[in-house]
Length: 307
Image 1: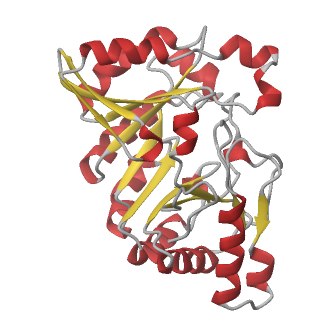
Image 2 (image 1 turned 180 degrees about the vertical axis):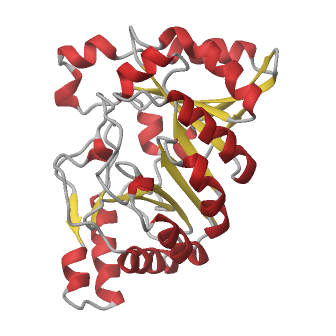
């Protein structure tokens, strides 16, 4: 296992499979990829980087995008990389879960995070740019049958959906899913823009209310995030809060290395000076040992964004 200069182990990869997406969420950060990249990794290349990472103690991978399910070879990718992993998950907008939940599970996917920013059709359409709330809700219902856990990612934004937090808590309890409340994230240069000031909604007061209501609280190793078990009329809801902005504890406990869709290591979502190309070496015939050294270089570059 590799450790960075701050003593943080790298235990998981977050692999972007594509920057293409069939939604148009107005706040999307494209997993920190500033420019659209068309030169996507092949299933064989994704399998190879996962195999090499598994030799370094990394046995957890999250597939993301863009929207990973727009790739027609998504089932093949899952099937290829699962043998190297103990935990394989995916983030998705849920648009294709109704048809893909079962085959994804059969191929080896363990769990899924579904972006669900509102339960109100018009608000959902305003945020995502598409009128597909019913399709996504059907997909969540199908995912619960075959994948566990199913997490709902709700990015909370002022003036749009902050009034739905407790409705979403009830929905999570009702559907047997886990709710993740997420603060809007942005690098320092965006933080002072009118866009960020308009939509950023601080979740610290919400977290205090969750703590007050919870019958049980746990702490995850990843980012030291808290999990709150909150009673509702539909049973106990499990709620996590992701507060990354100016959160030094969050950054100090980050164990993730990102992989871009065009084959580069990326050390932090919020940095734009941290891309390390491994795909060129891989396509030029580099051996596994050379790729490991590039991997090591990326780990050495890691540093907490908020210190």
